[in-house]
Amino acid sequence: MAELTALYRRPEALLNDDADPFPKGDQHQFFAENLTRLVSAIEQPFVIALNGRWGTGKTTFIERWRSLLVLESIVPVTFNAWDTDFGDDPLIAMLGTLHLALQGAALSEAENPAVDIAWAAVREASSKLIRRNAVAMSKLAVQAIAVAAGAGALPLTTAVESVVEDAAKDRIANFEEGRRSLANFRIALGNLVEAVRDPEHPERPLVFFIDELDRCRPSYAIQLLEDLKHCFNVPGIVFVLAIDREQLAHAVRAVYGAGFDGDQYLRRFFDVELQVPTLTRDAFLTSVFARIGVVEFMRKRGNNPVHVDLLVETLAELSNVFDLSLRTQEQIAAQIAAIVRMLDPRFYFPEQLVATLAVVRVAAGGLYAKLRTGHAEILDVVKHVAEYPAGVTWVKNGGINNFVVPLFYQGASPEERARVARQVEQGTRFVDIPLAQNELVAVINGLRMPDLHGQPRNLLKHCLNVLDMTARYQADG
Image 1 (cartoon, one colour):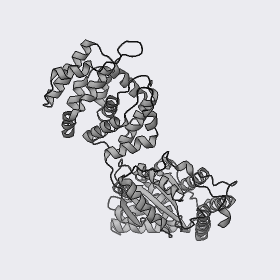
Image 2: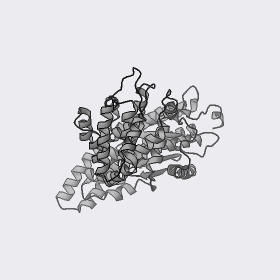
Image 3: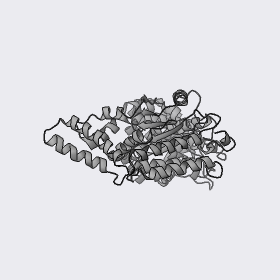
Image 4: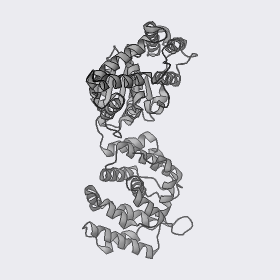
């Protein structure tokens, strides 16, 4: 390995814009640092399962942790199982992802011929392992279950367990060159791992992340797990699987029958299982905007900077009202980041109004559609939010200002100000909040801002139009 010292280059492209991928004091930072120490000390083949419900931030954590691993001279590879389950063979997809990752890390033939030679050996050995029929195992299992359980020869669970074990053995036995091919593949893969390690830290493993496994086709997910167990059982590789264990167990039962013990089946594949800590909404959203890379852009936005703290505060509070998942919050943040880049920097950016409308669009699509067509107004939004226990608290704590300030900042007509002022006061009464009319009018009158042509703009309609342009960022869950 000594000859690779001058050739080895860390995959800097995997790093975030900031040197530290985790904000100071972040719960995920402490978790990632402990995990980094764990994987750094592992020499044998090892599989870590990171458990968390869908939408709780597992993918975000993986993306940030992999940046930390790069700083520690550990080569990470990220494989999204859901993105590849259109194919028949996860072995092909995982090897393809590994190859792309090595290319992205600049570990190419020109810079590291040893890696190229090792990869060629892996490619040749793997060609002998590719199954002829990607669903053969699933079909065999289903047929055997029907025969054994239907005939009453065996209890369902016993029949299935027997079939799973027999199918796995048959699959290996029927490789084109049998167990020798599998052994050759493992040797080649082990040599590749040795070639890509940092020569200054040869003890540190390659970390292979597998995400979204629980969202795959059940048969594909099971085949992938079997491949990990039989083909990738190589020292120097640590697999980290981000899973929703409950959903993955459902997938197992979908293939092997409702009476099958999916939890027990999964335990065969995991050496350790850990729960991903849940971030506070504020901390999560702050890190999302930083990771997207728009914070500095927002601050330097002409004479009308965007206040990220107001965006985070509003999004966090309304996400709490509607109990939005971290995944959905991340998608909304991406939507808002796109809006910031599209809007003319010469105009005032209504952070709280845009954030509120973006959340309403996802959490209350029917109400958003009425706003869009003019069949709903501010009071309707206030009433809808106040239907939720946390919504009443939000309005009482000043959430209604999200509408008052931006709607009049651009210089609405006196008639429009008076009309919305009445709605706002009705809204505050609706949640039993006393509000002095003269104070409200004073706030409104003090926040006039005509557009570049001296004419008031309908900011609400403008924001709705811009939100419609970002339809592709709509949350899907």
